[in-house]
Image (cartoon, rainbow, N blue to C red):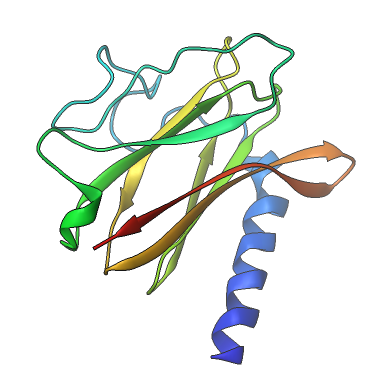
Amino acid sequence: MRLLNIASIVTVLAVAIAAPALAGKAGNGNGNESGRASGESSSTGNVTPTAKPSSSSPYLSISWPLGAAPTSGASNVPYVVWGCAFSTTYVSVAAYSPEAISFTGETPDANGCISVSNFSTNAAGSYKVSAFQQLHGTRATEVASTTFAVG
């Protein structure tokens, strides 16, 4: 277990350090270069976040595809992580689940919003999703997080 925790920390740090090199890459892996589609949620999990005023702190939220419920306990249910009020630097997103740590990221749009859709549940239990940005020099800082439970 201790080895898993150390590996997890190393993975998150590697993503945070590599983020600036990936910052110029568009898209989120779903073929939609903007990462956006109309509608808050759909069977494909795309959402269009609405920006809060610029004085707000960054925030994250979870959207579920139509018909999916996070309390069902089902594995492999896709979910979308989205949020707004981010600065212009690349946002690394890490999802901590009962069985794995997954990560991705993207550069916020003109409204300071992100939307990534390559996560899915893998087991019943508690999940935490965190967003990291480089605010001062090369150090990544957690700027937003959210939690949810499955099952």
